Image 1 (cartoon, helix red, strand yellow):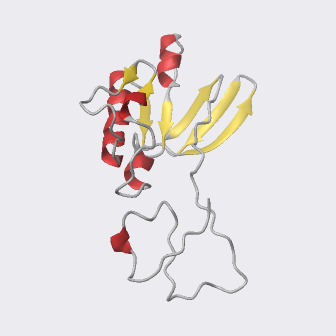
Image 2: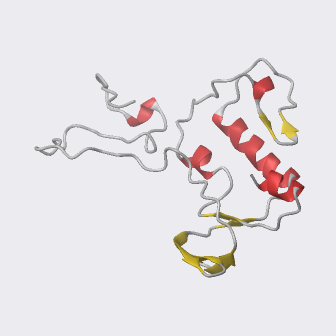
Length: 154
């Protein structure tokens, strides 16, 4: 989105509550690989250029790919900025953050599809002897105790 706005000479800022590629750094399991081959990894004006086009990027490689893209397009990212509210005003919007307020004509919400794990409430609590992890907490098999594992969800 930032690259497309820049290409149209539209002044903008990207408010990022953490750092670029944060969810890839902190909310993915260690052995995750993309499901598409590297040659298909493209963003506007940017594409995979490594020596393994038929391979599948690892999680750290995806982080590097996204960081590289943000640098190449000089995305105006304000990292470490949490949006706390967005209000409509006569002149557009007032965006309140933990770093101050922004006034703008247009707001693009790009929160992602899977920001928060939904853990259902059970009539009886899960016994403390049963380890439970959400997808954002799981990193690798070493976190799990010996024995069977049940994965619940989509």
